[in-house]
Length: 408
Image 1 (tube, rainbow, N blue to C red):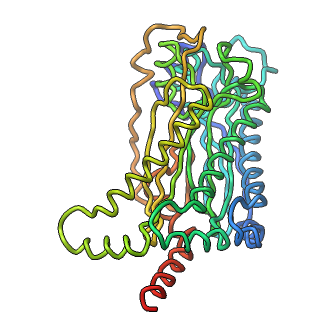
Image 2 (tube, rainbow, N blue to C red; image 1 turned 90 degrees about the horizontal axis):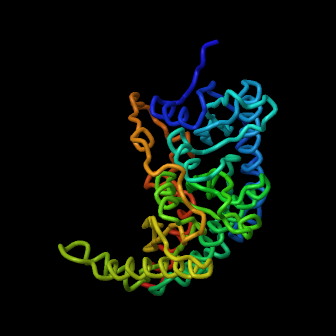
Image 3 (cartoon, rainbow, N blue to C red; image 1 turned 90 degrees about the vertical axis):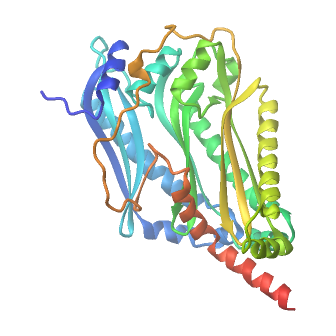
């Protein structure tokens, strides 16, 4: 029987070193109506701001059905596990398809009744994860659908008339990001894992709202403390980075993040506007972005200290223009500490574990109707959609209020 797999040559090499061989490509999907999402979200909850729980549940269930069906297909294919699992949203007119895709792997000496594991890791990352002492269990995700809202938004608009942090917006963003983190931890607990590694974060536009989603691999490691059974450790470091840390005796403690939303205010906005006509530094924007960054990093430091971490590594920072003179600064990293028993099985990684595979097909078609969490859109594109959909009304309100103040 011919095997049809999505694994690359480098992945096959790495998996072979772990006693695994390629199996078939497996797929699971579920299609729901966008109208259903809109009807759930079009309530007073979206006006008040914060999580729209009904939409969160619908999206969660759609993703879960797709992943469960992927597992079932893997079992029928005689798979020992599924690697490289991706979770995608594809828009078909007024419907959304949740699509889960991965590649089966087989283990020759394993009996047929063994539960199928699944992992967000590709074959190379899976080698790094297992060589660092982790045992993969299940692809997991945590999500939250939310709206900035008109209620909280109006208070934020008033506050944005003065320069400084818009606490209402900062609070909404902080709550949603931490909710997603709590939920991916809860999924890890349910499958008996004490860690979630390789977490990827995305913000996706959805029916006039936004969805914050984190995906990763729930796994177990014997060196982690007993407390990790009730509070699994979390990390957004790559698995190559995780291997290097384990080799030096470190383990992740938790993913830490900080958000701050700042406004230039009326005076600062006008000053920056007029200065933009001349060449030179716009000090109002320089200092605003600096303050927002400092505030976000301060929050990361607080989270890391509360978790008892030695260091915070791999910090990534993003600055988003939300319109109306308002910016968001987001910082994400992983808190780590020395742990007795942390080590790698081998002292060196093979080159095949770190070589990046190159795409050999370039698709020039429009891809704005599909969102893949294999390569999530932390980047500029989705943020543009995010800002355009979620903040258009608020930005308009800010503009009108500022005009009223200026001319009256």
